[in-house]
Image (cartoon, one colour):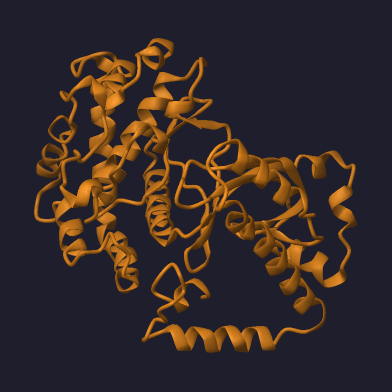
Length: 386
């Protein structure tokens, strides 16, 4: 609600239709809190306001060692408060902060940064019960079952960036994932958690056990997992028209799955002033090498078959997907330029039979697979390892 009171990232322009209503709701909710509930609310917002404020602290410093040192110093001054949770995950109690983890991200104009938190998965009800009784001793339990609930979670704190578009993309990806599971299609999607916390502010949970493609070192990956995830994300990319798929926005986990992140360009927006020069789906020379080397190889044919099956699986749910997107049209996000829903419906080929739709989805017609190798300006070491 705090995020949507305003229409801009700087919180200068109140939404004329819902801004006042949201402010009234926020006031009524906070005024209704008292006792331990009010203490819980204050602790939560005080803690993560301090964490988020680090972005403003480090912004004046130049990129590089100076900003890194400023980030570490600012993070070292913050102590974990009892009973608080990550804004992106209200089921995880924060136990501690890794004060050595503060890392500014690659942005000169803005200053997003990464930090790691030791958390315990406990569920919303247990977390609320602990905060009501102020008894947090269970988090120190030596019980083996309790220890298994404790893990380290990294998160990126963004200031000056509207993350609501990422939230929309990930909600649709989660819907796709549920559809694929429901029909029993063995493909892979990994929707991670993003939450907008204020105008232009947000928290993005990092995908565990993964690195961006341009950070990869030498490690062994599974070709089958790569193909399953490539097929699922290819359909997502086509239907949502996700662009800017450079190596920094493509992650690989230890199992070999490719995972897409950062959805700043989708639907009717694309880099370069919306020139529309990018293909419907990302497929570099290197990716083809991983999947058999040629479009006629058995592995690549399997990949194309999975793409068609994934597309046919989501077509019956097109209205649910369109409705989810329609709910966000009034936000003024840059991905909406007037014909979003019309074009989205058309990509589901609603007037065609299943056989015709399968032919329409032929991946060989959608990929820029014959483009230059500079599409991945890297060597073929990944393909060799896979």
